[in-house]
Length: 628
Image (cartoon, rainbow, N blue to C red; front, side):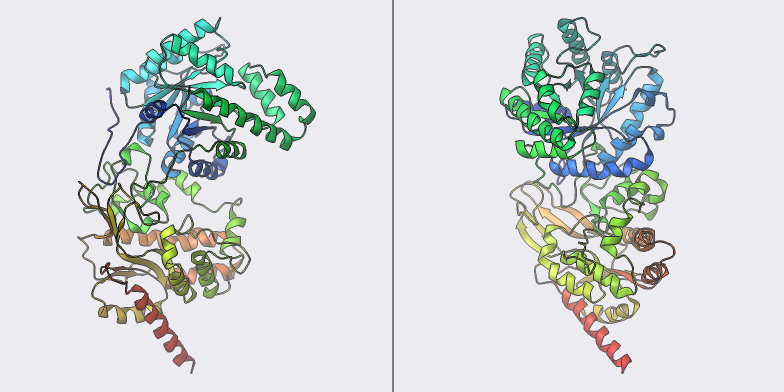
């Protein structure tokens, strides 16, 4: 049952490149160009949400990949959903867009159980494994005796499907009689099929350099990444070195003794020591990258990699939306525009698809989109919790007294200004992150609309043949040209809808979809069987790529999600006794409409702003006459 991961190469998608290939390519250069990180799973499910910001921050910092540790006790769990390491790996890969390697121990493991775990990893999309034996105990049983057995087992059953790393011990493994035996055992793991090595931690560059030279002398040619642990505190240092059976260099002990009770001073010392160590490793020409044992802390590692000026570059955008790293989606290059602000939600809704749209959207039925309620992991990531409630309340208002309070929050978000409570609105329920850089072009337009109750949740300006290398609008391969139709999506009151419906017939080149939370009425001039391309690119020697579309079926699915966020996310910021806030949000959810407009006349200045300005003026005049 040997399998290989397909290395797709498709128009507009970057194609999947196995981690082993990335390391081999970087090893051909004698410069250190990347770093990677190790994280461990939290002890409880509730603590999972603390790990997500950490994963996102390391991705933005430029980590090439992450590893997630595994405890041998997980080998005894029958329900795969109970294995926290798998859950963390799935979050990192599918929701934080970070290429992920999972540690896997084989002690006390049967071949049947190992196959079940490997199949589960395939289902998640994990293609990277750090193969370990694990700690022995008096009652150890199972079908595997050494890590080399596990490596050979994976290669026998899965061929090149998984990239496999193994552990190396620069000093030597505590159970090895001497260095020679230790290096020979390591070679057995490599000969069994390991793609690269990650070392145990060490404190001096010569230890790593000698280790690499010894490995090369006996025919180990795979990349060897140095495992580096920034000193975080005196207690953690002594505990980890005791567990690892490592000796701390006397110089470090002497330096730390006067400051051992000052955590900040110890941490700063650890950062400076590690920066010096890393520079020596980089100058040695023996490694393409650095692997950091973070202990689930960001500050030290972030400070170090910034000082070293290393990190994977994300400057090239293969597509206008965030590119997945899961190999199952590597050929995907078409998505509806509606989930632009909630890409994790779209990934969850479509993660059971056997194939992902490539080249054209085709016909997708609404049942094809899964429910967000079916997956507890995503629900946990997307929920309001006691820990994050205070932060959201600061952004979205500590209390809402009327709909104008909501309008104000929307305006503050798109304008990039503080709300009236003095806090910056960095996200909305429909937008997980800040505005895209291209939105700066129309920011003043959006601010004006939101100030008058046209609550925008998605938009893009029209673009006519801008270079694919443009720093703001560009995407795809070089020497191409990209195009966009102006698009805007918003919530709007019933009265403004009446005005809009009278105006739209005068603009035949504008496609629209309009509906309320119940889906009735539903107004549209779109063909349900014909998606509308709103973003496309033309590149040398390739077909035209249409990565972003608008279609009726997807909008009806998105509509339910979009309306639900008023009460299922925003309203949950407020306690049940805050009747006013719940009432304001409930009224908007029940009475407002969701609208999307597409201006097909992309070469010319868009008419969308004129249409919506007419709605504002018409509504204002009507309201004034009613007051009279």
